[in-house]
Structure formats: structure tokens, C-alpha cells
Image (cartoon, rainbow over all chains, first blue to last red):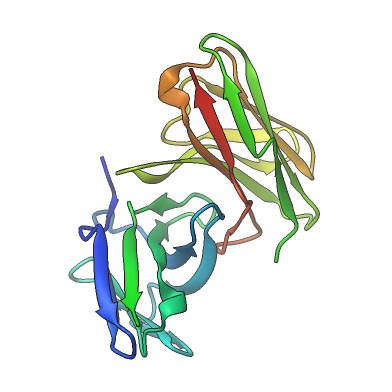
Length: 111
Length: 110
């Protein structure tokens, strides 16, 4: 049973516009959420995270929003760049040492 | 980049043969993980370790065993490989929360 879901397998966005990637979860015990970016033939790399005590965290062009009541988080990338084209995974944890990943969203930024 | 290496990077093996994948870290992180990545499933945890000789099962542990005799090495063993274990395997390390992943091992079981 998938506890973390990314319902959009793919997303295409024009360069310079905003990319919004969504993630839903079912386990209310999750207290830490992360986003990873993955290029082909490479391992995932950590992008940004958020604790459940916050509802927003920013790092440069990347912002993660957390809506605990809806069990929903989103990653905003503004402005989108062609180098952002990759697969994005969201992940969640309630122990700090075991993580549950979504199925990923493939983002294509069109120049 | 975190110092994580995986070996081999690619392997083709036959059904029924044993296979061992190695993960090596130079960061002295406490936690080490093995995941598999499959289309439509994302990353799924196989086993993880929270210290030397301390391991626990993940959500897809059947058919896999692990060992950690040194802080820096975490081995994943397929005792008798099956075609359903064809996948890309990633090792990861962490101290707390943020994980750092290795480059992956592509395993094909024919």
C-alpha cells in the first residue's frame, strides 16, 4: 500500500514559468518530508525538506509547501530552467531513519 | 558529494545464482540503506542498517539479505536471483533525515 503518492507521472513547463509538483500521503504520523531530484543513470540527490512544524520552506528557486490537514505537499520551482528537467521524488518519514518514497514525477522544462 | 560507491555498477546474472552488491561509504554515517527502483514503484526500501551488525527489514525484503560488518560497508545479497529482482539498486547513507545516494547498480537476471 503506497503511503506516499505522486499522481502525476509527468509534467511539462515552459522555461521561466513556475513548475508545481504535488505529493500526497496517507500516514498522519509522518513528520518530515523531503524532495529529491534524479537525473538518468545517477542516484537521487537531496533537494529540499520540511518539518511538520512548518508549512513552508524556501531555498533559492525551490519552495516546499506542506498542508497537514490535506496530507499534501508541493514543490514549486520558480523560474524553471532546462537543467531542472529530471525525475522528482517526494519522501516522508516518521522515524528519521526509514523513508517512504513516491513513484516520481518526470519534469520537462521546454526552452 | 557524499563519498558513496557501489559495485558492481552493472551485472547480468542467471536465475538461481547468488549475487552480492556492495556499498561503500567514506562519510562514517550511521545509517545505510538499500533501495530498488522500478517503473511505477519509485524507490522501495529493501533493508537498512543503523549500526555495525544492526539491520532491519524494509517493505520489500523477501529474497534479500544484508550484512554490515564494518561501518563503511553494507552488502546486499540475493541468495538465489529471480527475474523479478531485475532492477536498479541504490545504496544510501544518512545521519538523520537527509539521505545521500550512490550511483546505482543495474542488475539484470536472465
